[in-house]
Length: 145
Length: 56
Image 1 (cartoon, rainbow over the protein chains, first blue to last red):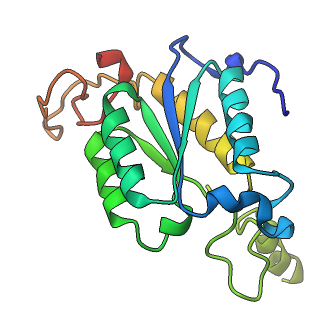
Image 2: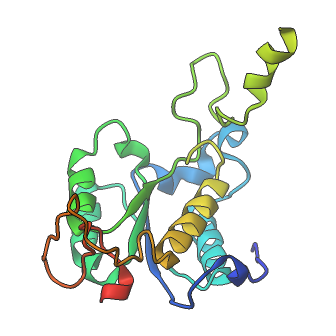
């Protein structure tokens, strides 16, 4: 289990924000995915614990929800909206579609952030696991000039 | 945030927490200007219409 030292120094208030992390379809299969792309996290449960522990180090209350069904995700968003300060969502299998989920999140009036394990805009010839904008790629042409 | 595996989540949690703390951002009650419409939809929304916890 990954533990984190206190990171309260980053915070400018002591409020325990309530953040809900939603993992969409196929994330339950995380442990069986290509480890070159998705890394060493062994399961969705490991990921949830990782996030919970990181949130705790910041004094943030992180709760997780995951489902392979968009309807279940929608209902959770509707039910949790009044008791949540912000959402983080990995739409996973809903990335290309998931319009209803996007609408549900917007209608909560809460801020939400979209995250992805992989680089979903990487070209087919590049490894999806690598971030696209570390700046290294931009340095190469400059060196040649 | 993407492509950073589980660390993408860390970035999102940290930035969201800091933004909610920020009294001039998501945690803000900014003064209304002539360009800012007060929504008046309950006390949970700021003048910009964005939810902020300090207004609860």
